[in-house]
Amino acid sequence: MVFLFSWRTTSMILGLLPLAFVLALPVTEAQASQATPPATSTSATPTPMPTEELTTPEPPITGDPNACVDGRLHISDLANADLHLQEGLHRVSKRAEMWQSDAQLVELRLACPLLKTGLQWEGTFFSPSAQANFSTDTFDVEPSEEAPDEVPYLDVANISFQAVHRSLLRAGYSDDLRLAAASSVTIRRSTEQTPFGPPIAPPGVVYVHVAVEERGVIKDVWVNAEDGTIYRYDLGG
Image 1 (cartoon, rainbow, N blue to C red):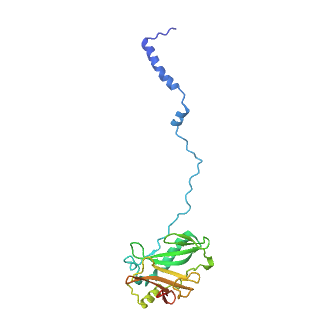
Image 2: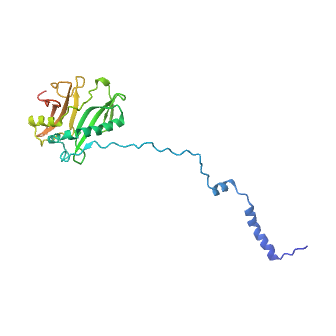
Image 3: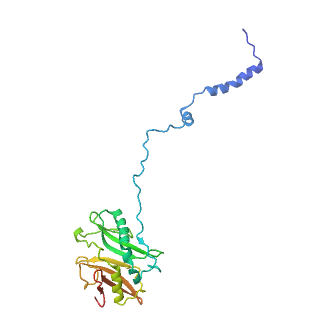
């Protein structure tokens, strides 16, 4: 049988040959990888979620609308500080426990919060396991060379800011007098190894230190937290 092709038929067949050649080419490995999306691994271990949420303790500030009204502590602010003592102590203790679970109070301080009324509580805690002191306001940690049984731990059970307030008034300091911003109010137990106060102040006692501004002069005063006796560095102590 004889097939007859016209010149038009022949040209059409020749034109389709390149297309057929392209379709017949094998797919390369690179082209296959581009065309096929990567398989998702089903054996990958998922990222574990935290078992508990880390929380930041509340700021050690207690609300007192009459305290630090001008951004500075006054002697009058001590009159009602007892109402906030336990709450303030609880808040600073929480901060210390985040540092070391065995942290124990050594020093308690009272100051003004920034740009608001109220009382800001600050503390220094000692940890026997870390052999260091921790400040709750700055979060500073300082190594200590004191033996744990010689550290003057502070017990606030017998502290009365109201008694300190009355003692200052009896000594002639008026309610409107400011306390030095840098010194604030500091409570600490004095010992022979770590004295706190003038030399005439007996050791083994908890003292409340206030730095009173009076007529441009800073006067350091230590008040016995139990009986209200006042000690000063007057004329060499």
